[in-house]
Image (cartoon, rainbow over all chains, first blue to last red; front, side):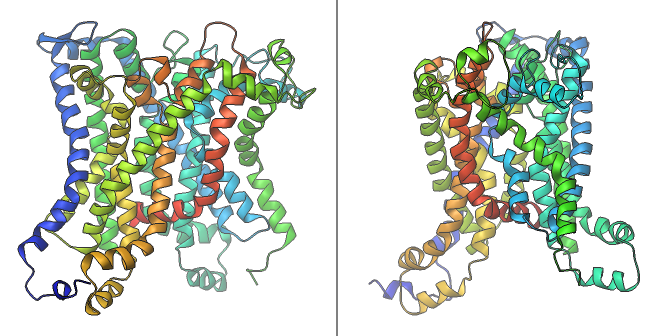
Length: 303
Length: 279
């Protein structure tokens, strides 16, 4: 045993000061690498013409930028990205809040209910979407089969053949897969609320609805804010649901920015224009990050 | 009296949860039902929930016809490499953050948070051009390194909040009794940190196991496909899709991960909530 070296000294030697930096260095370098190099490559590529083999050529006077902004498909995809993100977040937050409130009560089978609620979280989103693709099959899909057995519809619905129906279905699936994480986060928040306030409110004769509006909602604000921002980032970037169900089709009518990006990059080989789309998305996400950071620092100063 | 559980209230709660319960279990029912239905029944379009006879042979046939074994080996390799690498770099960083306050720690924390915001999808073109230039496209180890980069932030985040909850006094006590720093780390700190580290490792494993978008962009040849790519490629064919095989493959790729997930969900949720809110 090398006991002599281990007695804590008053003045830390030089290696004590460098040790933490050595310990964080590998993770810092790896994380920095995947952010800064691709960022540089995106900015560089966005200003150059690129041939079909991905070879980057000369500067092209921001032609990629003008091409992207002028493309009606880009405008439609950007608009659809906002609808996609907004609709899923609103649906997810409302349902998840209700689910979290229910799961926070004591009832028979609560442990089982919690597992069922978060179950989809464990499945790869791409595989879950493959299952939905089969379930939504117009002729022999089990969803049409079920709905017809229950006499909700009389004839099979072509779920993915029409842009509007397909996009609505995709939003519903998007909400379903966002609920597990969101309701878990909100449940964590609810279980941290002090119960004595509710007892006091009940003594005063407050109805459950009054308690919800005047106690629960204000106290849950920080958790709701964080749930909104994290979902914003997740949903805005969500790729498998739309790609696996329709690849943005029919006729690009379900494209959001991410699928548009993949299409122009890997189907049409327009890496320059795809870089422009990436950079625009990054700017949007950076704004979200700033909001998130401010929310967190606010939480810390309040705590 | 509000803490007494009544059957009426329980039934009402389950009734309210019913739509979500049905929607969540529906894909699993579809998966299991089709995976066990004989191929000729599925292909003839005679849909029914309960198979006429249980076609266990779907699983063995799927294994051969879909190249499932290769994709499983690829996914396993990528996920294991990602997990080992992530733990290897995150544990020291999280230890430093919870035990040795240093200048620039807040900056480092914010930086990690921002990298968390950059999902692979928005950087995919940059990563793709990088891989083309370095001739590293279509490589599973390279994919694992990239996955690791994207998982570091969350891993450090969760580990650090766990490590901070391990009382430092235990280590001080060991030092005072004359144990070396390394010895203390090995016999006092590591055993206490191990469960949390295992949870973060499993979380990373599941993340790498399930990833789709980056793999789709960076893997080119079919023999390098991971499970999500392999299975979605099977379901996206132009010709008749053999859904009984696709569902059997999905089932095998999903159930083990779901079981692990159910087992560790409690830790996962408290870790995530702590990381997201406390910072």
